[in-house]
Length: 180
Image (tube, rainbow, N blue to C red):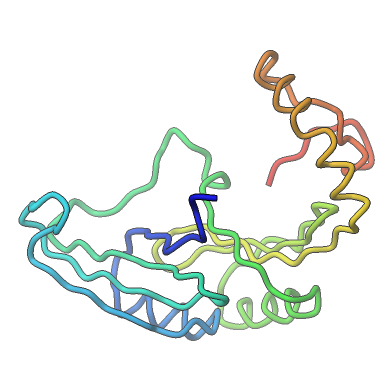
């Protein structure tokens, strides 16, 4: 396989220091690296930035760019706010619920837990407006096998109809489609 892992995922942030402190405090991520330049190495554009890197566990890295000379950051207004998000995995439902309580105690609004049948999640926003999902797996091997068996049929049907295929309706307890 060509790809070994995700090297890092990068988002824009409003304030690099605030972002590092928030992720350390609320999600326990370690600040591992800062890179600052006055010129973009790939494009040579004169665009000063601070690029910060956080340890998201098991070799995963979450990075942010602060861009002080650019227009204020915004999100894609043609995409619903729930779509673009970063899902991070935790070890158990107990950890999920404890984190929800800690976030709420700090005044952070949390949605969920939401039961997706194969995992449970909570949703909240970081100080930059990025939607985060904290999830814990609850699937059995049998559930994952059933989903694996129908994935291509579902994709093919969706490609033709743009309607939610019902191959995995068992996940929802009814025939309703499901989205995060």
